[in-house]
Length: 420
Ligand code: HGY
Ligand code: MN
Ligand code: MN
Image (cartoon, rainbow, N blue to C red):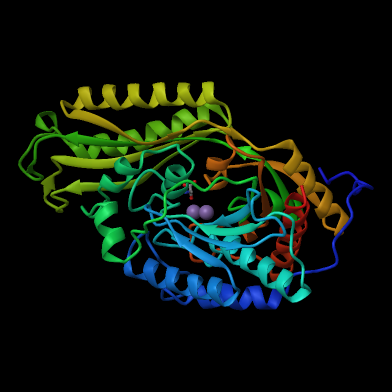
């Protein structure tokens, strides 16, 4: 599935990024929220997220970018072009992580954007259009659902007040936490881009398994997140006959098994995950009277994703009724599949080839901030391999040579778009 030979009309601009400098910034940012044994944890709007934000903004200012912070806490560093009346070409990603985060998920896209800026500064290149490097609030959605929250608000896919009122898994609201960490900005949430390109690790096994360096991402699969609450009856684990139980813990476990069965029946690319599960009272000798669990369903095809939801919700209702447990559902996030622009996909493919890298097209299994820009401007993503396909895991790793390759393709793609 390697790419066709480079298109003749793709001329490479001279500069190349400084991969060692980019690696140093990645390592420095990964120090913030560093975990024992590697990886980092910077859940959105925590003190560690604030420290990460402060560091990246300091770098933005060192590079001469004009920094703005909007009302949902998105940070945009803008670099002037020859004609500042034109809409900017934007790149970026996120610097919040999951609890078991690696150093590259999101961070690579933001810091590669800064590396592009520093490379252009050194080369004395001023693009026709302004460039902007952004990081978006709460891309992960692990503390506050939905994911891609900041970019969704900025691009008009989520109401600002709804987002600010969102209460997270620890009972605090987005608005309160933004204020607490000092990132409740005053700029309006309305960045309009001429085009948007995001560099990101694949977070899956495809490129690594096929030995391919660059992914020209064709789009993002649909995402459905649902919170399920189960209410049963707590009782003594020793004295209560099995026939008399209303065991919320049992039903939660059966739902997890049912989800795996649904994904197996529908076949790839359907995926289904129960990622969060808490029982109450969560004691060895008490039948659980309450369970909270989350359902994460994804598919590249909207109709199949809806079928997966139908089967999952039916399973929740049937399994709960069989055990005499009540079930309630609440949607946490719902995004339809998003296609990226052929113009950008082809540019990524062409520049990867022109730079001598193997490249293939593939969809994204993970959600990304880029998908929020796709409805309003030409948008695309560049993937580099995740070794062993590992991500959302402290063992997440991408090779320096692949980081160099991805950032060079980003530079070339941004330069082409910024002259358009
Ligand atoms: O869940 C996702 O797809 C992303 O990591 N927010
Ligand atoms: Mn990410
Ligand atoms: Mn992630």
